[in-house]
Image: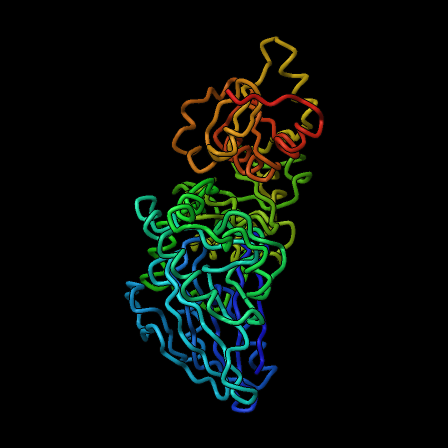
Length: 464
Protein backbone atom coordinates (compact mmCIF):
# COMPACT_ATOMS: atom_id res chain seq x y z
CA UNK A 1 0.00 0.00 0.00
CA UNK A 2 1.19 3.49 -0.85
CA UNK A 3 -0.23 6.58 0.91
CA UNK A 4 0.77 10.20 0.34
CA UNK A 5 -0.67 13.30 1.94
CA UNK A 6 -0.81 16.61 0.06
CA UNK A 7 -1.21 19.76 2.14
CA UNK A 8 -2.22 23.30 1.14
CA UNK A 9 -0.76 25.81 3.59
CA UNK A 10 -2.99 28.70 4.56
CA UNK A 11 -6.25 26.90 3.90
CA UNK A 12 -4.93 23.94 5.87
CA UNK A 13 -6.45 21.43 3.40
CA UNK A 14 -5.18 17.85 3.26
CA UNK A 15 -5.84 15.43 0.43
CA UNK A 16 -4.56 11.92 -0.16
CA UNK A 17 -3.44 9.47 -2.80
CA UNK A 18 -3.91 5.85 -1.70
CA UNK A 19 -2.69 3.16 -4.05
CA UNK A 20 -1.76 -0.45 -4.59
CA UNK A 21 1.55 -0.56 -6.41
CA UNK A 22 1.17 -4.28 -7.07
CA UNK A 23 -2.02 -3.70 -9.07
CA UNK A 24 -0.95 -0.27 -10.33
CA UNK A 25 -4.16 1.53 -9.26
CA UNK A 26 -4.94 4.39 -6.88
CA UNK A 27 -7.67 6.56 -5.38
CA UNK A 28 -7.49 10.29 -4.63
CA UNK A 29 -9.43 11.48 -1.61
CA UNK A 30 -10.62 15.11 -1.30
CA UNK A 31 -8.61 16.53 -4.24
CA UNK A 32 -8.02 20.26 -4.43
CA UNK A 33 -8.07 22.16 -7.72
CA UNK A 34 -4.35 21.88 -8.48
CA UNK A 35 -4.58 18.29 -9.69
CA UNK A 36 -1.20 18.03 -11.42
CA UNK A 37 0.42 16.90 -8.18
CA UNK A 38 -1.77 13.78 -8.04
CA UNK A 39 -1.13 13.00 -11.70
CA UNK A 40 2.62 13.48 -11.35
CA UNK A 41 2.84 11.36 -8.19
CA UNK A 42 0.72 8.58 -9.66
CA UNK A 43 2.83 8.50 -12.82
CA UNK A 44 6.06 8.41 -10.82
CA UNK A 45 4.75 5.45 -8.77
CA UNK A 46 3.35 3.59 -11.78
CA UNK A 47 -0.25 4.07 -10.65
CA UNK A 48 -3.45 4.76 -12.58
CA UNK A 49 -6.03 6.87 -10.73
CA UNK A 50 -9.31 4.92 -10.88
CA UNK A 51 -11.31 6.40 -7.98
CA UNK A 52 -11.95 9.95 -6.75
CA UNK A 53 -13.63 10.06 -3.33
CA UNK A 54 -15.06 13.00 -1.41
CA UNK A 55 -15.45 12.66 2.34
CA UNK A 56 -18.11 15.42 2.18
CA UNK A 57 -19.17 18.51 0.22
CA UNK A 58 -16.59 21.09 1.22
CA UNK A 59 -17.53 24.60 2.36
CA UNK A 60 -14.10 26.21 2.64
CA UNK A 61 -12.58 25.29 -0.74
CA UNK A 62 -13.61 24.22 -4.22
CA UNK A 63 -12.89 20.59 -5.04
CA UNK A 64 -10.73 19.37 -7.90
CA UNK A 65 -12.87 16.26 -8.38
CA UNK A 66 -14.34 17.16 -11.78
CA UNK A 67 -10.95 18.40 -12.99
CA UNK A 68 -9.27 15.14 -11.99
CA UNK A 69 -12.10 13.08 -13.49
CA UNK A 70 -11.75 14.94 -16.79
CA UNK A 71 -7.99 14.26 -16.84
CA UNK A 72 -8.18 10.57 -15.84
CA UNK A 73 -11.65 9.22 -16.60
CA UNK A 74 -11.92 8.07 -12.96
CA UNK A 75 -15.34 7.95 -11.32
CA UNK A 76 -16.22 10.31 -8.47
CA UNK A 77 -17.73 8.78 -5.31
CA UNK A 78 -19.76 10.73 -2.72
CA UNK A 79 -22.18 9.76 0.04
CA UNK A 80 -25.79 9.34 -0.97
CA UNK A 81 -26.84 12.28 1.26
CA UNK A 82 -24.53 14.73 -0.52
CA UNK A 83 -27.17 16.21 -2.88
CA UNK A 84 -24.49 16.34 -5.59
CA UNK A 85 -25.86 17.01 -9.08
CA UNK A 86 -22.72 16.22 -11.09
CA UNK A 87 -22.05 12.73 -12.45
CA UNK A 88 -21.02 10.47 -9.57
CA UNK A 89 -21.43 7.12 -7.84
CA UNK A 90 -23.01 6.98 -4.39
CA UNK A 91 -21.64 5.52 -1.19
CA UNK A 92 -23.41 4.39 1.96
CA UNK A 93 -22.55 2.86 5.32
CA UNK A 94 -20.58 -0.39 5.00
CA UNK A 95 -19.73 -0.07 1.30
CA UNK A 96 -16.25 -1.23 0.31
CA UNK A 97 -14.06 -0.13 -2.56
CA UNK A 98 -11.23 -2.32 -3.83
CA UNK A 99 -8.08 -0.51 -4.92
CA UNK A 100 -6.02 -3.56 -5.82
CA UNK A 101 -5.04 -5.13 -2.50
CA UNK A 102 -6.20 -2.03 -0.62
CA UNK A 103 -9.74 -2.02 0.77
CA UNK A 104 -11.62 1.16 1.67
CA UNK A 105 -14.60 0.65 3.99
CA UNK A 106 -17.13 3.45 4.31
CA UNK A 107 -18.33 4.66 7.70
CA UNK A 108 -21.10 7.25 7.57
CA UNK A 109 -19.89 9.81 10.12
CA UNK A 110 -22.24 12.83 10.10
CA UNK A 111 -21.57 15.78 12.37
CA UNK A 112 -19.61 18.28 10.33
CA UNK A 113 -22.10 17.78 7.50
CA UNK A 114 -24.95 15.28 7.06
CA UNK A 115 -23.07 13.40 4.31
CA UNK A 116 -19.64 13.17 5.95
CA UNK A 117 -17.87 9.82 5.71
CA UNK A 118 -14.72 8.24 7.11
CA UNK A 119 -12.76 5.69 5.08
CA UNK A 120 -11.20 2.79 6.97
CA UNK A 121 -8.18 1.64 4.94
CA UNK A 122 -6.93 -1.96 5.06
CA UNK A 123 -3.89 -3.46 3.33
CA UNK A 124 -5.09 -6.98 2.58
CA UNK A 125 -1.53 -8.24 2.07
CA UNK A 126 -1.04 -7.64 5.80
CA UNK A 127 -4.46 -8.35 7.27
CA UNK A 128 -8.15 -7.52 7.36
CA UNK A 129 -7.98 -4.93 10.16
CA UNK A 130 -7.95 -1.28 9.09
CA UNK A 131 -4.50 0.27 9.29
CA UNK A 132 -5.56 3.88 8.98
CA UNK A 133 -8.63 6.09 8.74
CA UNK A 134 -9.18 9.00 6.39
CA UNK A 135 -11.49 11.02 8.61
CA UNK A 136 -12.20 14.02 6.38
CA UNK A 137 -13.62 16.83 8.50
CA UNK A 138 -14.90 14.55 11.26
CA UNK A 139 -11.89 13.93 13.52
CA UNK A 140 -8.88 16.25 13.42
CA UNK A 141 -5.67 16.40 15.41
CA UNK A 142 -6.89 17.84 18.72
CA UNK A 143 -10.28 18.87 17.38
CA UNK A 144 -13.40 17.83 15.44
CA UNK A 145 -15.24 19.37 12.51
CA UNK A 146 -17.40 22.37 13.34
CA UNK A 147 -21.17 21.82 12.97
CA UNK A 148 -22.31 25.20 11.63
CA UNK A 149 -21.10 25.36 8.01
CA UNK A 150 -24.32 23.79 6.72
CA UNK A 151 -26.18 26.61 8.48
CA UNK A 152 -26.51 27.94 12.01
CA UNK A 153 -30.01 26.49 12.33
CA UNK A 154 -28.64 22.98 11.72
CA UNK A 155 -25.66 23.28 14.04
CA UNK A 156 -27.25 21.87 17.18
CA UNK A 157 -28.60 18.81 15.36
CA UNK A 158 -25.29 18.15 13.65
CA UNK A 159 -23.45 18.51 16.96
CA UNK A 160 -25.66 15.74 18.34
CA UNK A 161 -24.85 13.58 15.32
CA UNK A 162 -21.15 14.29 15.83
CA UNK A 163 -21.42 12.94 19.38
CA UNK A 164 -22.91 9.68 18.08
CA UNK A 165 -20.28 9.48 15.34
CA UNK A 166 -17.40 9.92 17.76
CA UNK A 167 -18.55 7.78 20.65
CA UNK A 168 -20.54 5.10 18.86
CA UNK A 169 -18.38 4.63 15.75
CA UNK A 170 -14.87 6.07 15.74
CA UNK A 171 -13.99 5.37 19.35
CA UNK A 172 -15.02 1.74 18.86
CA UNK A 173 -11.93 1.31 16.66
CA UNK A 174 -8.54 0.16 17.95
CA UNK A 175 -6.18 2.72 19.52
CA UNK A 176 -3.38 1.97 17.03
CA UNK A 177 -5.49 3.19 14.10
CA UNK A 178 -3.65 5.95 12.24
CA UNK A 179 -5.76 9.08 11.72
CA UNK A 180 -5.27 11.11 8.56
CA UNK A 181 -7.63 14.12 8.69
CA UNK A 182 -8.91 16.39 5.93
CA UNK A 183 -7.52 19.54 7.55
CA UNK A 184 -4.62 20.73 9.64
CA UNK A 185 -3.66 23.96 11.36
CA UNK A 186 -4.85 27.06 9.50
CA UNK A 187 -8.24 25.67 8.55
CA UNK A 188 -11.46 27.33 9.69
CA UNK A 189 -13.29 23.98 9.61
CA UNK A 190 -12.47 23.41 13.29
CA UNK A 191 -11.91 25.52 16.39
CA UNK A 192 -8.25 24.83 17.17
CA UNK A 193 -6.77 22.12 14.96
CA UNK A 194 -3.31 20.93 15.97
CA UNK A 195 -0.18 21.52 13.91
CA UNK A 196 0.64 17.84 13.45
CA UNK A 197 -0.80 16.46 10.23
CA UNK A 198 -1.62 12.95 11.44
CA UNK A 199 -2.21 11.20 14.73
CA UNK A 200 -3.51 7.96 16.23
CA UNK A 201 -6.92 7.22 17.62
CA UNK A 202 -5.40 6.30 20.98
CA UNK A 203 -3.60 9.60 21.29
CA UNK A 204 -6.76 11.51 20.39
CA UNK A 205 -8.80 9.43 22.84
CA UNK A 206 -6.47 10.58 25.63
CA UNK A 207 -5.84 14.20 24.62
CA UNK A 208 -8.53 15.55 22.30
CA UNK A 209 -10.95 17.79 24.27
CA UNK A 210 -13.82 16.76 21.99
CA UNK A 211 -13.40 13.15 23.09
CA UNK A 212 -13.51 13.82 26.82
CA UNK A 213 -16.25 11.73 28.49
CA UNK A 214 -19.41 13.81 28.85
CA UNK A 215 -23.15 13.59 28.38
CA UNK A 216 -24.48 14.20 24.89
CA UNK A 217 -26.20 17.45 25.88
CA UNK A 218 -22.95 18.76 27.37
CA UNK A 219 -21.05 17.84 24.20
CA UNK A 220 -23.57 19.69 22.04
CA UNK A 221 -23.15 22.85 24.13
CA UNK A 222 -19.36 22.53 23.94
CA UNK A 223 -19.44 21.88 20.18
CA UNK A 224 -21.54 24.91 19.23
CA UNK A 225 -19.76 27.35 21.58
CA UNK A 226 -16.99 29.76 20.61
CA UNK A 227 -16.96 28.93 16.91
CA UNK A 228 -14.56 30.96 14.76
CA UNK A 229 -15.68 33.07 11.81
CA UNK A 230 -17.03 31.16 8.85
CA UNK A 231 -14.81 30.90 5.77
CA UNK A 232 -15.67 33.52 3.16
CA UNK A 233 -18.22 32.58 0.47
CA UNK A 234 -19.34 29.45 2.33
CA UNK A 235 -22.68 29.07 0.57
CA UNK A 236 -21.26 29.86 -2.85
CA UNK A 237 -18.43 27.35 -2.46
CA UNK A 238 -20.81 24.64 -1.25
CA UNK A 239 -23.05 25.35 -4.24
CA UNK A 240 -20.14 25.06 -6.65
CA UNK A 241 -19.12 21.75 -5.11
CA UNK A 242 -22.66 20.35 -5.26
CA UNK A 243 -23.06 21.32 -8.92
CA UNK A 244 -19.57 20.16 -9.86
CA UNK A 245 -16.75 22.69 -10.21
CA UNK A 246 -15.82 24.11 -13.60
CA UNK A 247 -12.98 22.24 -15.29
CA UNK A 248 -10.17 24.79 -15.51
CA UNK A 249 -7.84 22.88 -17.81
CA UNK A 250 -4.13 23.59 -17.82
CA UNK A 251 -3.35 27.02 -16.39
CA UNK A 252 -1.22 29.06 -18.78
CA UNK A 253 0.07 32.61 -18.10
CA UNK A 254 -2.01 35.33 -19.75
CA UNK A 255 0.09 38.49 -20.19
CA UNK A 256 -1.90 41.63 -20.95
CA UNK A 257 -0.56 44.73 -22.63
CA UNK A 258 -1.95 47.87 -21.05
CA UNK A 259 -4.23 48.70 -24.00
CA UNK A 260 -5.70 45.18 -23.72
CA UNK A 261 -6.36 45.52 -19.98
CA UNK A 262 -8.09 48.92 -20.03
CA UNK A 263 -11.40 47.62 -21.48
CA UNK A 264 -11.63 45.19 -18.55
CA UNK A 265 -11.22 48.04 -16.07
CA UNK A 266 -13.81 50.10 -17.94
CA UNK A 267 -16.25 47.20 -17.47
CA UNK A 268 -15.59 47.01 -13.71
CA UNK A 269 -12.61 44.65 -13.37
CA UNK A 270 -10.57 44.81 -10.16
CA UNK A 271 -6.81 45.19 -10.05
CA UNK A 272 -5.30 42.74 -7.55
CA UNK A 273 -1.74 43.67 -6.67
CA UNK A 274 0.05 40.65 -5.19
CA UNK A 275 3.54 42.14 -4.89
CA UNK A 276 5.26 42.35 -1.50
CA UNK A 277 4.02 45.14 0.74
CA UNK A 278 7.15 47.28 0.38
CA UNK A 279 6.77 47.37 -3.41
CA UNK A 280 3.09 48.23 -3.10
CA UNK A 281 3.76 51.06 -0.63
CA UNK A 282 6.37 52.55 -2.95
CA UNK A 283 4.05 52.66 -5.96
CA UNK A 284 0.60 51.35 -6.78
CA UNK A 285 -2.55 52.20 -8.70
CA UNK A 286 -5.15 54.07 -6.64
CA UNK A 287 -8.08 51.80 -5.82
CA UNK A 288 -6.14 48.60 -6.45
CA UNK A 289 -6.46 45.80 -3.90
CA UNK A 290 -3.28 44.66 -2.21
CA UNK A 291 -2.98 41.08 -0.98
CA UNK A 292 0.49 39.52 -1.12
CA UNK A 293 0.93 36.27 -3.06
CA UNK A 294 1.45 34.23 0.09
CA UNK A 295 -0.24 31.24 1.70
CA UNK A 296 -3.00 33.45 3.15
CA UNK A 297 -4.23 34.77 -0.20
CA UNK A 298 -6.99 32.14 -0.45
CA UNK A 299 -8.26 32.98 3.04
CA UNK A 300 -8.22 36.76 2.56
CA UNK A 301 -9.60 37.35 -0.92
CA UNK A 302 -13.16 36.46 0.07
CA UNK A 303 -13.30 39.37 2.51
CA UNK A 304 -12.02 41.89 -0.05
CA UNK A 305 -13.52 41.24 -3.50
CA UNK A 306 -16.77 39.68 -4.69
CA UNK A 307 -16.07 36.40 -6.54
CA UNK A 308 -17.83 37.32 -9.78
CA UNK A 309 -15.66 40.40 -10.49
CA UNK A 310 -13.07 40.00 -13.31
CA UNK A 311 -9.53 40.31 -11.92
CA UNK A 312 -6.36 41.69 -13.52
CA UNK A 313 -3.21 40.81 -11.59
CA UNK A 314 -0.08 42.83 -10.83
CA UNK A 315 2.71 40.33 -10.11
CA UNK A 316 6.26 40.52 -8.84
CA UNK A 317 7.21 37.92 -11.42
CA UNK A 318 5.21 36.18 -14.18
CA UNK A 319 6.30 32.83 -12.72
CA UNK A 320 3.86 33.48 -9.85
CA UNK A 321 0.83 33.56 -12.17
CA UNK A 322 -0.06 29.89 -11.90
CA UNK A 323 0.15 29.72 -8.10
CA UNK A 324 -1.89 32.93 -7.70
CA UNK A 325 -4.58 31.67 -10.07
CA UNK A 326 -4.85 28.41 -8.12
CA UNK A 327 -4.97 30.29 -4.80
CA UNK A 328 -7.97 32.20 -6.11
CA UNK A 329 -9.63 29.24 -7.84
CA UNK A 330 -9.49 27.17 -4.65
CA UNK A 331 -12.01 29.56 -3.11
CA UNK A 332 -14.16 30.04 -6.20
CA UNK A 333 -12.49 33.00 -7.91
CA UNK A 334 -12.29 31.81 -11.51
CA UNK A 335 -12.42 35.06 -13.48
CA UNK A 336 -8.72 36.01 -13.69
CA UNK A 337 -8.35 37.61 -17.11
CA UNK A 338 -4.55 37.92 -16.99
CA UNK A 339 -1.69 39.98 -15.57
CA UNK A 340 -0.14 43.32 -16.54
CA UNK A 341 2.79 42.26 -18.70
CA UNK A 342 4.80 45.43 -18.11
CA UNK A 343 3.74 45.86 -14.52
CA UNK A 344 3.24 49.48 -13.51
CA UNK A 345 6.00 50.89 -15.73
CA UNK A 346 3.80 51.17 -18.82
CA UNK A 347 0.89 52.36 -16.69
CA UNK A 348 2.91 55.26 -15.30
CA UNK A 349 4.66 56.02 -18.63
CA UNK A 350 1.28 56.69 -20.25
CA UNK A 351 0.39 59.20 -17.55
CA UNK A 352 -2.09 57.01 -15.70
CA UNK A 353 -2.27 57.70 -11.95
CA UNK A 354 -0.08 55.99 -9.38
CA UNK A 355 0.28 56.74 -5.71
CA UNK A 356 2.31 55.64 -2.71
CA UNK A 357 1.59 54.80 0.90
CA UNK A 358 -0.70 52.16 2.31
CA UNK A 359 -2.22 50.77 5.45
CA UNK A 360 0.34 51.41 8.16
CA UNK A 361 1.46 48.59 10.45
CA UNK A 362 1.93 49.76 14.03
CA UNK A 363 2.78 48.10 17.32
CA UNK A 364 0.39 47.90 20.25
CA UNK A 365 2.27 50.61 22.21
CA UNK A 366 2.01 52.97 19.23
CA UNK A 367 -1.75 52.43 19.16
CA UNK A 368 -1.95 53.12 22.88
CA UNK A 369 -0.03 56.37 22.40
CA UNK A 370 -2.43 57.45 19.64
CA UNK A 371 -5.41 56.66 21.85
CA UNK A 372 -3.96 58.62 24.78
CA UNK A 373 -3.11 61.58 22.57
CA UNK A 374 -6.70 62.86 22.69
CA UNK A 375 -6.47 65.13 19.63
CA UNK A 376 -8.51 64.91 16.44
CA UNK A 377 -6.29 62.16 15.03
CA UNK A 378 -7.36 59.65 17.66
CA UNK A 379 -8.31 56.52 15.72
CA UNK A 380 -11.43 54.45 16.09
CA UNK A 381 -10.39 50.94 17.09
CA UNK A 382 -12.25 48.27 15.09
CA UNK A 383 -12.01 44.77 16.56
CA UNK A 384 -12.69 42.15 13.84
CA UNK A 385 -12.59 39.04 16.05
CA UNK A 386 -15.56 36.83 16.77
CA UNK A 387 -18.06 37.70 19.53
CA UNK A 388 -16.71 35.19 22.04
CA UNK A 389 -13.16 36.53 21.52
CA UNK A 390 -14.34 40.12 21.93
CA UNK A 391 -16.14 39.25 25.16
CA UNK A 392 -12.96 37.73 26.58
CA UNK A 393 -11.26 41.14 26.49
CA UNK A 394 -10.79 44.04 24.06
CA UNK A 395 -9.28 47.48 23.76
CA UNK A 396 -11.49 49.95 25.62
CA UNK A 397 -14.17 51.63 23.45
CA UNK A 398 -13.38 49.39 20.47
CA UNK A 399 -16.09 48.99 17.85
CA UNK A 400 -16.83 45.31 17.33
CA UNK A 401 -17.38 44.23 13.69
CA UNK A 402 -16.41 40.59 13.00
CA UNK A 403 -14.40 40.20 9.82
CA UNK A 404 -17.15 38.23 8.12
CA UNK A 405 -19.58 41.16 8.66
CA UNK A 406 -17.27 44.00 7.66
CA UNK A 407 -18.37 44.24 4.02
CA UNK A 408 -22.02 44.63 5.09
CA UNK A 409 -21.31 47.02 7.98
CA UNK A 410 -18.58 49.23 6.54
CA UNK A 411 -21.11 52.07 6.33
CA UNK A 412 -21.01 52.30 10.14
CA UNK A 413 -17.48 53.72 9.89
CA UNK A 414 -16.38 57.18 8.74
CA UNK A 415 -13.72 56.94 5.99
CA UNK A 416 -12.42 60.40 6.94
CA UNK A 417 -11.60 59.33 10.49
CA UNK A 418 -8.48 57.27 11.28
CA UNK A 419 -9.25 53.60 11.88
CA UNK A 420 -7.07 51.08 13.75
CA UNK A 421 -7.95 47.46 13.02
CA UNK A 422 -7.15 44.75 15.55
CA UNK A 423 -7.76 41.00 15.84
CA UNK A 424 -6.10 38.27 17.91
CA UNK A 425 -2.77 37.99 16.09
CA UNK A 426 -2.69 40.47 13.19
CA UNK A 427 -3.83 38.11 10.43
CA UNK A 428 -7.55 38.91 10.17
CA UNK A 429 -6.86 42.59 10.81
CA UNK A 430 -4.58 42.69 7.77
CA UNK A 431 -7.45 41.46 5.59
CA UNK A 432 -9.82 44.00 7.13
CA UNK A 433 -7.30 46.82 6.73
CA UNK A 434 -6.81 45.94 3.06
CA UNK A 435 -10.58 46.06 2.57
CA UNK A 436 -10.84 49.49 4.21
CA UNK A 437 -7.92 50.75 2.13
CA UNK A 438 -9.69 49.59 -1.02
CA UNK A 439 -12.80 51.48 0.18
CA UNK A 440 -10.74 54.73 0.26
CA UNK A 441 -10.49 55.13 4.02
CA UNK A 442 -8.12 58.01 4.56
CA UNK A 443 -5.98 56.55 7.39
CA UNK A 444 -5.88 52.88 8.31
CA UNK A 445 -3.65 51.25 10.92
CA UNK A 446 -3.11 47.50 11.24
CA UNK A 447 -2.11 46.44 14.75
CA UNK A 448 0.77 43.97 14.55
CA UNK A 449 0.29 40.98 16.81
CA UNK A 450 -3.28 42.01 17.67
CA UNK A 451 -4.63 41.71 21.19
CA UNK A 452 -1.90 39.18 21.96
CA UNK A 453 0.78 41.84 21.54
CA UNK A 454 -1.43 44.33 23.41
CA UNK A 455 -1.47 42.02 26.43
CA UNK A 456 2.26 41.23 26.12
CA UNK A 457 2.89 44.97 26.31
CA UNK A 458 1.07 45.01 29.67
CA UNK A 459 -1.80 47.13 28.36
CA UNK A 460 -5.29 46.71 29.87
CA UNK A 461 -8.25 45.00 28.21
CA UNK A 462 -11.85 45.90 28.84
CA UNK A 463 -14.70 43.39 29.22
CA UNK A 464 -17.54 45.91 29.04
